[in-house]
Length: 192
Image 1: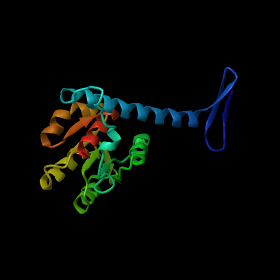
Image 2: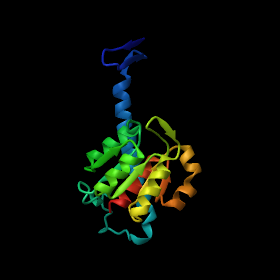
Image 3: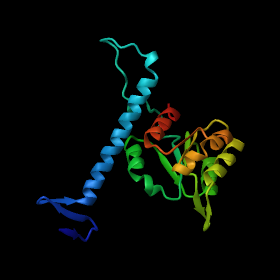
Image 4: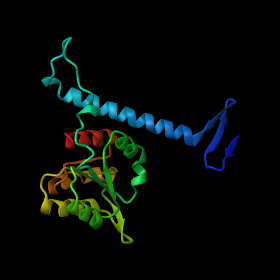
């Protein structure tokens, strides 16, 4: 049985149980983001294990407590489809992170110049002024690096971005990833 409600939430019945797909998707997405954050924390702990001596008195601080000064000087996220990352963005905002959005290279660059950001996240390709620019993220890196060599810039893109990772890092990307876990780790590092 398939029912479409007024709110566009699809309901399906499986083994006599009604499942609301929208609600279930929302809950699963929240749980996935939480797991990604926890995995990023575990990876950071493992990477720094040589500096940690475990005994009965040693505790590992919660990664969420390490993000300081996160309201001021937040993240500039340049992406023509930020809704593709809505669950991750919502989770970061719930942690108190300030995230400003831009949908184009030029607007993103102007926001960067006029604001104070501790990090830039950008997709690789964007449609700008009706034209497909498959390397808009590269263009943004080049513009930003002309005036700031230190702000972390992460290209958060799909498989095509990963194929160009070496080139993007050569011109100034701090990291190139298609992984939410790696992105969370990059954000934590940038905001330390």
